[in-house]
Length: 268
Image 1 (cartoon, one colour):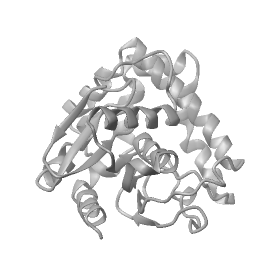
Image 2: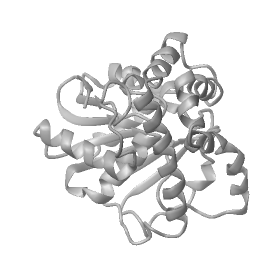
Image 3: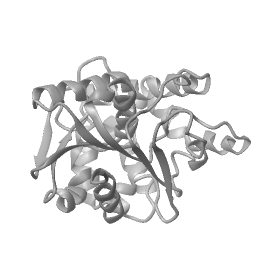
């Protein structure tokens, strides 16, 4: 596993989403390095971490992070995650509560979706996920770079990505093993969404204090999915909607994300 590290103090694990890698946190790292020890790994198959043939699911991603904490001799950490990194953060909190202090999750769904008729609009929003999961097509979309470039250009509110940033994300996922791994990850996506709707996580409770920060202009995940009563599922979980941000809220509003991280992770 490859990771970047900066700063000193209480540890924060920074978990990126698709189709990015650890570099997505660079603006947040600049703002937090004076207060915290920041550890930004590349998830399995992403960036410069190995891309094995299997293990492209949230549960394995969570186990990978526990192994990283063990290797760094860290008993516990705060966790800040976006997209797949946010989902991984939530599973860390559910499955390994002894390793997590607090969670800040950005534009990722929690595992207790609220069923609502207006969620039908989510179906066309999820087209990219279906294409990623399709055998052959998903791998091809990554190897050509077309899928990654399109999502980064059209999925953000505004234009937060430089050409160089898009190139570094695109180029890493062109490798055949990584392209196959990301396609497998989105097959897991479809499986776990169905399981969550059927109540797989109904009896699991989140103990770590958690903030879910969600840009309402997200074109990949409808904000109504996370707008649900959470008291019966979490001891302390708040949802904050950001009206002027989209899916890539960390790149669009690094100032806001950093401020929320400072406030949440320093709370008594």
